[in-house]
Each structure stands twice: as structure tokens, then as C-alpha cells.
Image (cartoon, rainbow, N blue to C red):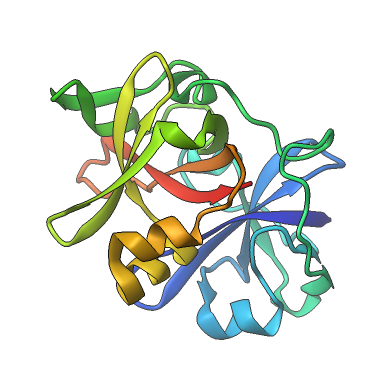
Length: 221
């Protein structure tokens, strides 16, 4: 299975999540080395960055709940092969697909906890919904803003139908923010007038699990 890496996100405890586009099967895949998350060493060993390509061998199914079950794919860690470093044309024919709105990207299943200053807060998809947990939208660069809130980096997206405040999980953007604040985040963005914005759902952590919150997994151009 050949994957174009689309998402590299930072999790807790030195763990990372990786996702990629399987152009042959026309689907998103979340490769899980030996069924687990990625480490910093594994990312570096195989040159895992958005736009790079890798070959992997699936190793069964992952016993996860929807919506993440849609993409979760255990792989044999020993079979990971770096194909090329990229980059790719994120807007070309055959590139990972994009939608025009956040709601459309998740089949209309988007909900939110509240609205403040006309911005939807706590945006989520109900746990167990049988849809994709990974998607993307195409937005002009002036439709994206970044803010700091309670020592966290967040993005405000305006897709023309609604405005959403989302946590940023992108490894690249969070690294830039820690090194130089919001100014460094702006410098880390593509210079293109249009953005390919990767969106992903966090795994539900409630007991019982109720909500999978939406995050910005990356911005490409």
C-alpha cells in the first residue's frame, strides 16, 4: 500500500499520529505501526512529513470505534519503506480530495457546544458516527486566523457558511508556535493564496465516549 502523507499530528506523551492518502483505493488511511502510534524516532527514520510517500504492508484490522475505525489500519512496522520526500501539488488532479465547507467535509454531522462572537466553539462529531474521521477543506488564506487561548494554539476558520474555532494538532504549526509564537506560525504557512486544510477528529475520551472534537491537522499549499 502506497500512502502520500497528509497529516502528522502531535499527541501526548511523545506520541504522534500519521495519516495518508491511498490514491489507488481512493481513501484516507491512518497507518498504525504494529497497531500503535508513531514515535519521534520513527518519524525521523522514515522521513515522515506531509507530502512524502511511503509503502506499508497492512497487518489486519484495528478494533477501534467509529468514526476512527474508518481509517485505522495496523501496519507491519518492519515493512515501512520511504519512497520519496515530496512535496506534492496539493491542488492537482489525483491529490487528496477537499470539500468547500467544514460541515460538508464530515457529511453534515458537525455539531458544537456554544457560539461566542459568532464563532462556533467546541466543534465535534458524535462518537460512533459512521463517517470519516479525516477530511480536508479548501479555503482562501484570509479565511484562516490563529489565536492563543489558555496556552493553546487555535485556528479560526471561516468557510463562508460558519466560523469555527478549532484546536491545532499539526506538529509543524505547534512546533513553530512554541519557537516563535503567532508570528512564527504565520511564517510557517504556505505562501499560496489558497490553503489545503487538513481536518481530523480527536478520539472521544469521555466515559462513556460522547464527542470527537475537530482539530486542524495541517495546512498545505
